[in-house]
Image (cartoon, rainbow, N blue to C red):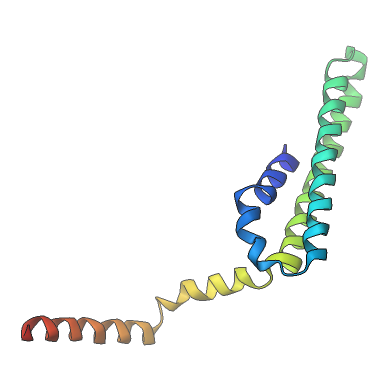
Length: 127
């Protein structure tokens, strides 16, 4: 399920929003191949889960172990994918957004805001 969500996020609206940031054709091709592999792996996993889930009760132990492996694999894949997105597509965007969030809390911003308010009041009283 995680793979399907990651694939939809990267190939859907979020993928189109990130396209301007990817300049090299090779990077785009790499992302398409990786997302295709992720989607294909998800399909194989779903088929495997269905086969094991419908098996006899003697396979319940195997099913439990498979689910543990799947959970660990999914966690590693999500970590890898997020690291890949950060290094190759998003870059320092997260840090820049975090810095932009702090601008409104700075003393310089509050002073500029105060000056703008005074200007509006002055212009309003003159007009």
